[in-house]
Every structure is written in C-alpha cells, then in structure tokens.
Amino acid sequence: MVPATGLRDTLLDHAIVMLEAGEAEPGIRALARAAGVSAMAPYRHFADKAALLAAVAERGFALFLDALSAADAEGSDAERLVAQGVAYVDFACAHPALFRAMFARGAAAPKQPDAPAFAILTRRVAALVGADDPTAALGCWAIVHGMATLALDGGVTLMPEQVRAVLRTYVAGIVAVMRDCPTPGPSPEGEG
Image (cartoon, rainbow, N blue to C red; front, side, top):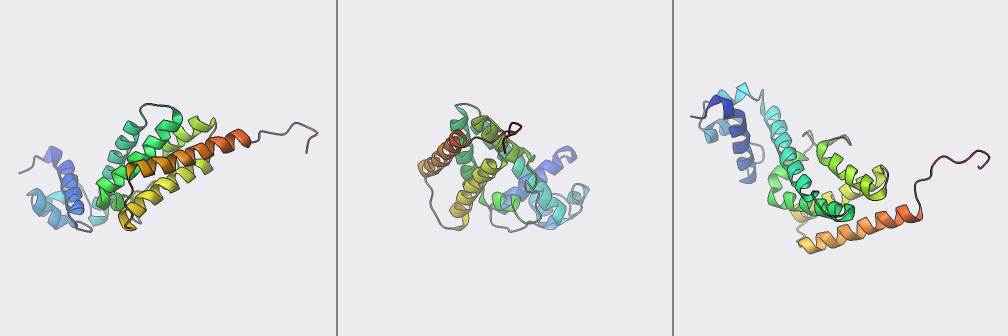
C-alpha cells in the first residue's frame, strides 16, 4: 500500500509510465490498479480523467523546465540558446508520449508567453539580441518544436549535431538581423 502523503506523486509516476508504455490516456481505475491502491483512492487527488491528464502535463512541463534550465546553465547566450534547443528535441525523443500529452489539445500547454518553459527561451533570446523580441522567440520555439515533431511523428531521424547546426544557423540569423536592422526606437521630432 502506498502512503497517502506520496500518493499523488506515485499516481503521476504511474500515469507517465503507462503513457510511455503505449496507453493513450491512462484511466483512473487502470491507474489505481497499477499503483496498487483502491479504485477510489486516485479520486482524492484527481476529480476525473481530465484532471489527471492535466496534472500529467503539468508534471511533464516541470521536468521539461528542469531540462531546459540545465541546458541554459553555461556558455555564451548563443551557446545557451542552442543548448536549450538540443535539450528540447532530446526531451521530446526521450519522452515521446509525455511530450505529446503535454502539448495535446486541452492540456496545460504554454499558451501564454510567461509560461516557465517558454519564459526561459524568451529570456535567452532577449539576452542574445539585447531586447525583448517576441518574433525571434516564437521563431526559436517553432523551430525546436517542429524538429521535435518531425523526429516523433514525421519519421525523421535527427542527429544531435544536425539539431545544433540548424539552431546555430537560426541564432546567427537572429544576431545578423538585429545587427543590420536593430529595433527602431522613437523617431526624433521633425523626422517622419
């Protein structure tokens, strides 16, 4: 029997294992069986299957944030941004079912720019270009998410060095654009 104090975490651990084993959406009763608890015990922590799946997505994003934060730990701003991208694709490939569940329609995906996993990316882009640049941040996210999706669902085998090369090219492009066309400030009076 699982102690009640750690039951929620145990249930989430089992739900993730079930997802990774191929169960599309673990049900509460199947989860209870897997955790070795009564059929009603999970309901103390999750009102229904949707609440369980939202909690799984939330746990996934916490793990994801840990991976991105570790990748962002050292190096130049460009190196950190590339490392984040590699970590993003690596996380998706290491946890394909969890990654899909995190971004499933209705899941707790980062719908707002201040979501922690997206915020670490936007902070690094801002540090790289010297200003908040939502377009560059969205481009970075689209590239890494696209590569992750291609690796998972498109049957494309991406080697880590390929991912790094694509990301280095994009980062160099961001830097070049900002150097050649910096974000315009307010125009002086009389110019128009």
